[in-house]
Length: 554
Ligand SMILES: Cc1ncc(C[n+]2csc(CCOP(=O)(O)OP(=O)(O)O)c2C)c(N)n1
Ligand SMILES: [Mg+2]
Image (cartoon, rainbow, N blue to C red; front, side, top):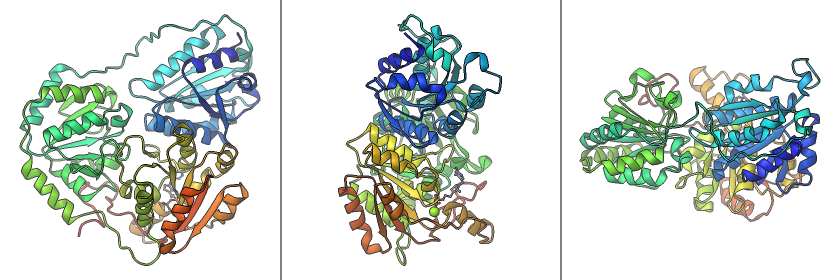
């Protein structure tokens, strides 16, 4: 078999049903084999979108997403998508063509040092130098991407390797020296943690994206109920613990709820699961959780005590470790007083907005929630739109909120929504977009229409790069330096691509527009003209302690 044939055969054996990508000279042998293959191929209109689509597919389905691009500019266009997946620990395999082996290092046409460029943004990467290694490398790539702390893996394949013949041998076993993730917590640490939990009066569970990646949502719920501890999640953790649950505090951090942040600052014990104490969560580090002992459960040992000093580290898979803890804990701590205090905070400082004047973005999200009955997969762009979606849609199931948390990539949402819809065709997929972000991958309208990928896009059109404008308003004396947008007519633009556009300028039209969009069997852009200078509150100014919130306290 040729290298290209081996690649396709291996992808099939790995269970790959769909690939997102873009062709070019350095991947022609692979594309020639794809022509006859039954792997579904989706031609995006930009390589960045192919990487985001693979990422959205992975987040929505839990499977590994696959994307492919040619050498040079094709590969460099993938990098934003790869970095996005890397920061959020999303399993994707990116395949790139490379110039012929003997030309590498020659500044050949469309040559780029792709393994060099992507080293810091991949979990692992390969340059295939011998076709005999290809099958093993592909197996390893899928294994590395999807196990331990997941992440993107890149395979760079020179054209001549794609063309070379060799005997195909499917490696039965994978054995990678130096790569043996720890899946179960150390029993001694579990015992210690259980003691801390049993003796705590004000415990708080702080859950991150690791809950979703390890499918630990059921164990998380059992633990919270067993020890009667409130649960706050990060942006990445939304959906990992139902926000409808009475113990839920919603999201914490910069745009978290007042009560979640107060709970952090007053807790005597924080049980961090699959979260990494990102600066958007902790705020000023030396003022973070001043009274709390910290238990940190994470599969990646390098994330423990990285930002915050931890009292009990437990390295392991969240699902397993929570299961171990559930077995070990035999006494329920008395948290009645603590839960009473929290209930008072909840009552006193709810999430709120003033519903008057123009269309409020929060209202749009609430109606999308009502009309999709909370069952949709919500994808976001980056900025205010992202934070409003996180605050106002009530997530109750894992893998229903897809957002670029770590890298904060504008332009992520639309192609990721496309990937999610391909992976979950029965689900309603909504991209909550900003008028700035949507223009960063708007060309994917063509991909959606051609491939009948029916995605709904709610553009929260404020005429601004809103989140940046908000910072300028609050911290730069309202000097709106280059944050005002001159926008195209999004309705006409959608129509030009063969999609459907709906413009909404009045509050009374919001519901019917969403209803109409849901009925249409096509990609729909709903252009909501919202209050231009609405802000996201509460907000912790960057570098402040997380209970120094503005716009949230009554
Ligand atoms: C690729 C990229 N460039 C720049 C930024 C910085 N940035 C963060 S939010 C934002 C504004 C986003 O505007 P829009 O999409 O209209 O969303 P809004 O905040 O108005 O809802 C910008 C420029 C970013 N996150 N990503
Ligand atoms: Mg905007």
